Length: 119
Image (tube, rainbow, N blue to C red):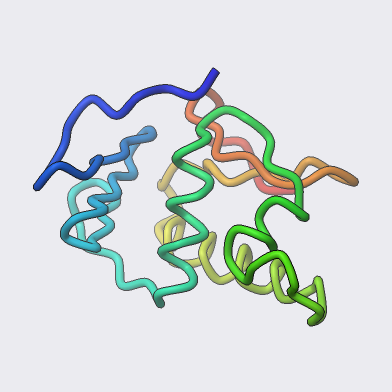
């Protein structure tokens, strides 16, 4: 079951997972309280993953969520966006690593296994 956000800002959720915080209303992401600059697509991807924290989202679910049900582009676009998002969130060597690949299925924002290297 998806977890409900503990806080809100202007009626919209502030999603938290480990050392990552995503404020939907302010369109702001922080890691260990340090701001992280994301593109609009990276923000939407992180939001989708954090809204379903600790639940695997299939690649198809994420593609539909970000690009719509009629997306006919290259599915590797998602892989590139995940890689860029990981780089921005985990750029410090001691940062927790939350976005994990579940081979053949999709991706998970894992709040319970920090420090696990991405696959």
